[in-house]
Image 1 (cartoon, rainbow, N blue to C red):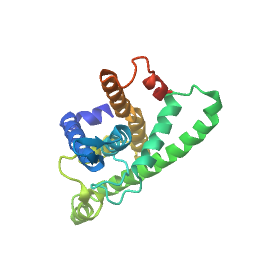
Image 2 (image 1 turned 60 degrees about the vertical axis):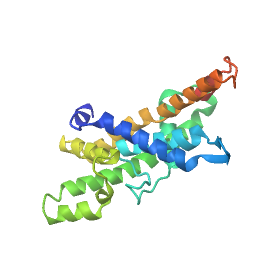
Image 3 (image 1 turned 90 degrees about the vertical axis):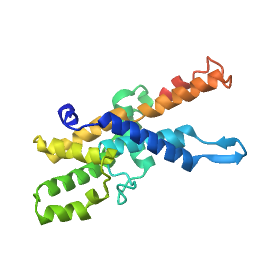
Image 4 (image 1 turned 45 degrees about the vertical axis):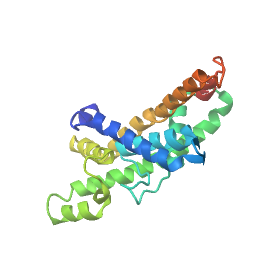
Length: 219
């Protein structure tokens, strides 16, 4: 995976531009103006979670429904919950009473993520097998690839899959690499935003400094 990323240029720049653009779009879409100079928005639910989900989706080429993947089968809530359940299972099994439910949830989450990702990887495999003739041109025009925008984060995700396959990885192995990387990144942006919001609330005197909000969130 590291070697494959090394062959893709401008990843950091594209990720930064993605966060700026999609974050601004979500803010404009979700903010509610209550009255002049008074606005309401749920920063975590309306901004951080969908932004984090689409970031992982485009970078690791998942099947979330977006402008560049209009035929996607997954919504933000379904994909985010699936990845979070994988993350909880791997990093936060601290409650024996919840172990059975978490085992069930991680199985359900793994099926959602792996089945949807494998379908897209298989499509890239099929396109690679078409060569450079008329069939390949038709595939680029009428498949999901036709919706990719040049230089977008999702186009880099597509290139990442293609690069991993070119290195000799099987479709199954590529799929596993994608979801294993993605669940490691899900929730990180959300917790970062949570920490910033809490710090702002502390500075504004809206919550006491010994509130323990973030520790409760992590649990």
